[in-house]
Length: 580
Image 1 (cartoon, rainbow, N blue to C red):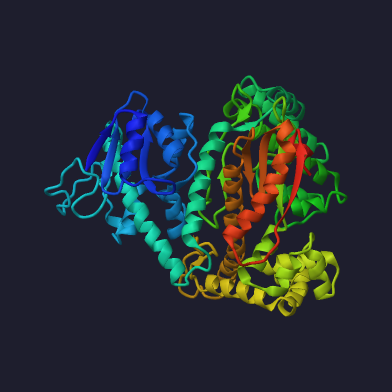
Image 2 (image 1 turned 120 degrees about the vertical axis):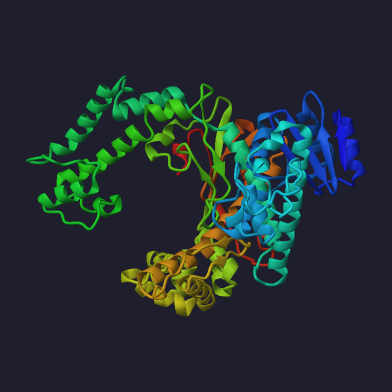
C-alpha cells in the first residue's frame, strides 16, 4: 500500500500508525530530492519541499532502525545535517554474510534468493530467455525473481514514489539477512551473536559517512611549510617536477662511483646498485635495509630518499590541494570493512599518513584531540574467542606479556614473540622456539588457532567470532600442501583474531559515538585499533573517562562471558604527533 506524507508531523503520525518505535526497521532511500520510506507492506512517499525535515523529525521522535541499501543514503542524510542513531546497512551485512567486498544490490538480492549470479540482468541487455515477458517495468523485481537492472542503476531516483518502492526492496533484503544471521547463531556455526555484529557493522557505516563529511583537522599553512621543507616548493610545471626528482636522486647517487643506468624507482635496479657496493639482499624492503645503514652510506641515503619520494609523489602539494579543503579538513571516502577480515579503511591518506606529516594534524582553536589506542588488542581478543582460561587470566594484567613470560619461563621479549608467532603462524628461528612454549602453556588458544589454520590450508572459508565470512582462496589440484597451503593457513589463523578484533573495535567506536551526547566531541579518525576524537578543551577529561566506560560496555556487548580485560592507552594532545 502506498501512502504520501506532506509534513514532518504527518510522517511521524503515519509511521506511528504502523507500529514504528525505537529499533523498529524502517526502509529509507534518500538521494537528492527523492526520499521514500517503507515499513511492513507499506511504502511511504515524502512529498515535501524539504523532504529531509521529515527524516529528521521521525528520527528525533521515533528512533527507528533505518534500513539502507548502502552508505550512499547515510551520506545523503549527513550532507543534510541529519545524523541517525542506528541503521541496517544491507551492503555491509552482505559483506558479513558472503565475504569479499562486492555488495551491489543485484548481487545481494541474488545471494539471498539463491539465484544464479551469472544470469543477473544488466542494463540494455536483450533477454532472449523471456525473463521480461509480461514484466511491469515500473516494478523493481522481475517475474524471474531478479532485480531489474534499471532499478539497480538508479531509476528509482526519478520520483519519491520510486524511492519508496526501492526502500521496500531494501527492507525485504534486510529481513532475509536477519533470518540468515539468526540461523548462523542458533546453529552454532558462529560463536558470537551474528545479528548483533550486523547492527554494529551497519552503525559503523553511519560513522564512516560522518567521518567522510567532517574530515580530519589539518593546519594547512603548517602543511605547506612542512612539505616544502621536505621536497621543495610546489612544482609549477613538468620541468619543475623533473628537476625535483633529479635533486632527490642526486642525494643517493652522490655515494656511488657511477649511477649510470640506475632508476631508483625500479626495485631491480636498486638491488643491482646495492650489489655493486657489496650488499646482496633478496629484496629492498625498508625493514631489511634498516639494519644495514652502517654497511655503506648509500643505504642511509636510499632510506631518506624513499621518505622524500613518498611525500613528493603521494603526500605532497598535489595531495594537499586535492584532499584538504579550504576549511582545513582532510577528507576521503571511508568503509567499515576492507572486504577481508573486516577492518575499517579510508582513502586520501587517512590510513597511511607518513609520520612526518602527523605534526600538521592539529586541533582547532579551543579544542584538543583525545587519542585512545587499544592495548595488546589481538592477544586479548585471542583469549576471549578461544576461551583459554590461562590466557584470560593474563589479560587481567596491564601488560599481558609479563604473566605470559612468567608462565613460559622466558624473558618478556621472548613471550611477546611467542604470542605473535602463534597468531601469525611463524615457525622458524626464535619465533619457532618460542611457539613451542605456547603449545604447552596455552593449549586451548593454540588448538583454536590450529583449527583455523587447518581450515585455511584445506581451502575452507572461515567465520569469525561475530560471523564474518573470510575467504581464504581457491584450492587447485595438488594445492593442499606446500607454500600455497601454508600461506592460506597463516592467513586463516590470523584472520580469526584480526577479524574478531575489528568487530570489537567497531562495537567500541559506535558505542562511543552513541554516548557522546551533548559533549562537543566527534570521532575524526579510526585507525586500526585507535580512535582520535576532536574535543572541546573543557570536555577532554570527561571524554577520556567516557572512552574507558564505553570500552567496558562494548567488550560486554561483544562477548558477554569472556571475562577478558581490555585496556586503552589514552592521551590528550593538540597535535596527533604528540600522541605516542
